[in-house]
Length: 425
Image (cartoon, rainbow, N blue to C red):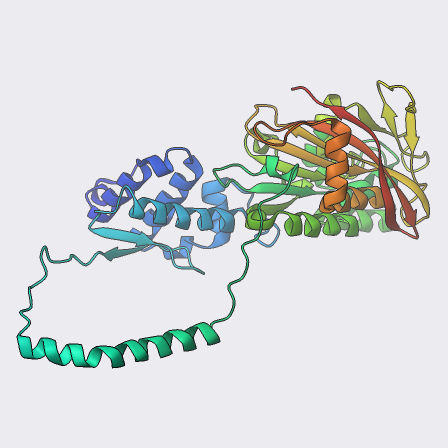
């Protein structure tokens, strides 16, 4: 945040903001402090035109100028968290404040509302004997009326909706007590198709370079007009796969009471600094989601590929155990029938302040199967037993699991666990 001007600092409303951001409720969340200060400062200066979701994302969260609020819900998630933190403050540490702050739903302005002061002592009303007797005679009728109203209210009141359960293991490792968003990073289909056109592998460093993202390619310096049109479209659009949509839908359904904390992002929008804090789900293998290659050296089962677009992809088993294969080869192409493989991996982020779940299939059928696998309680229990975990409480247990699915005309079916590994950070 920039230095606050003296006029604003002398405003009692801004002094309330400073007391709130210095409170214990806000000490562990710099993002929420910055968000509250930005909303309040713009409101008090009358600059409400700056309080659109897009401008908040750029000013507070450092989003790119062209980021899409439809695909990135981080602003909405943080504002919901801010509302909860404000309630927590005014119910506890700030219960004696002369004013309270509200952020109305559907808006990002801050409202300052004075608290009505109650009188120190309520006036004592003398009750004369005749009045007491009249009240006593009316008491049975009052009780009967109260019973009737209560019965009618209970009859017509809709049944309370059951509280959704918390996320099950292993998804619970992604959600922390601070209610930080869990960012689901879906595959970049444009990147996958560009690889096929160029017939060249692409590193994460190359993927992040401005020249690659602008559609400039080294592999074909003189494209035909048709190729140029295709590459221009691929460089300017954000596409993902049906399998990724299934995985996202499954994760939101299984996450229970934490589903509102899930934010969807494209692999193209992510930057290395984003990985410094928080939890992530990466959907797809390195050939469709290059961010997965960032974690490949931590995994035993790693995707391999020969000539891009011509050779079959497979998982290399770096350290085979007894009865395991050195390589597991999947489908020739998405949409065919046969066996495909996928891995489910849970790892810590590099600095240890969060977890990363990777769901990668050799083809889309494998990726879809990995998401559906975690949605089934029986599968989760089988994975739990295969890993030999005694308890799911306490610190997260990091692991990777290789699964096999039988695909029929592009639809995964009959998934089983092939091999597992515990990961020791």
